[in-house]
Amino acid sequence: MHNIIKEAVLKQLCLSFDYENYDRTVEPHCVGLTTKNNYAVRAYQTLGSSSTGNLGWKMFEIGKMKNLKILDQEFSPARPGYKRGDKGMKTIIAEL
Image 1 (tube, helix red, strand yellow):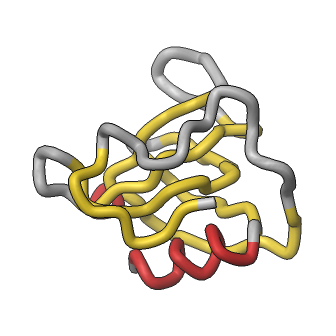
Image 2: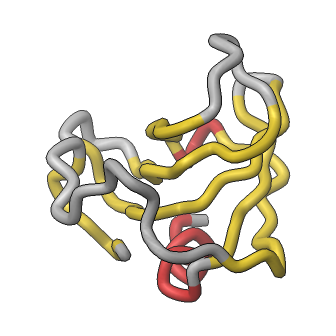
């Protein structure tokens, strides 16, 4: 599944998926292995819901995603607040 996310990061395409029983639409900026050894994506959530009710920057564990889809919707440039070399990742597979 991280290959699908890698493609979305490199092509700057939005993703949609279910995560913790909420529908999400995000702009993926970085995918890799976290410092806790989980594959994850750092993304800016633009649509959908969450337990906090907030949109914005989030880290999503790939193993918890369901119904992952790449959308035809492009995004650019990187959102304010994005920093290359994400410190939450010990190994980066792809990033903007």
